[in-house]
Image (tube, rainbow, N blue to C red):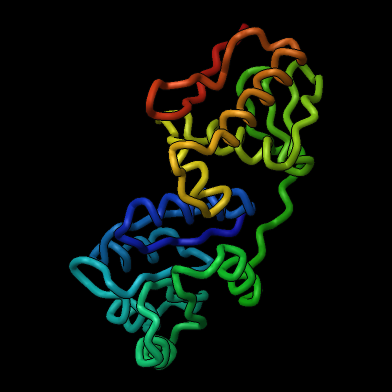
Amino acid sequence: MQKILVIEDDSVVSLMLKAQLELKGFEVIQVFNGSAAIRKVIRTNPDVVLLDIGLPEKNGYDICKELREFYQGGIIFFTAQESTEAEIASFDLGADDFVIKGAPFEVLYQRIKRLGVRPKKIDSNHTLMFGELVFHPNDCDCSFQAKRLGLTQEEYELFYYIATNRDKVVSRQMILKVLKGADYNGVDRSIDIKVARIRSKLKSAGLTVSVIQSVRSKGYQFYYTAQ
């Protein structure tokens, strides 16, 4: 699996990138401050580094300069700084590309692919499994006891995101940010409707317990126990 290292101190932005890139099939590693960035690159040897400019302890310019002493992989600055000077400085230091944070995720994804870094097709044998509940990435669907649920792509992406964050409660705001790039206004019920449909399809497949649990005023959490 192709690896991407995200060097970003804003935990919300970092989490959004991680979730979006994982849905595309990448392995994502996170670093939240500049001082740890170089060590992490050495230890993990990522295929691409996504690098913010304004980082605590050591800024993105210094990191890029140091990386280019030994690192031959792709470096993309992903930053809120929109000035021409910032873009020119990034390329002068050896960056391969420069993407503004306000750009749609698909723009960043295409820039990553332009570097020749593409997520390898996932082997259908390598699936995410929770007992007899199985996620099938190639088909964007799930099965329970070998019975397919018939999820839509949006339902699959939502279910996958909640399941892969099973150790924590995922808020509606974060779900909309990651999957839609939109802010939750406290009124939008589209996530709740999709969750209800997923639950219905799970029940029809024979899964009687609720694996997507509602957490009052917070969001959703995945919980699976073998039946």
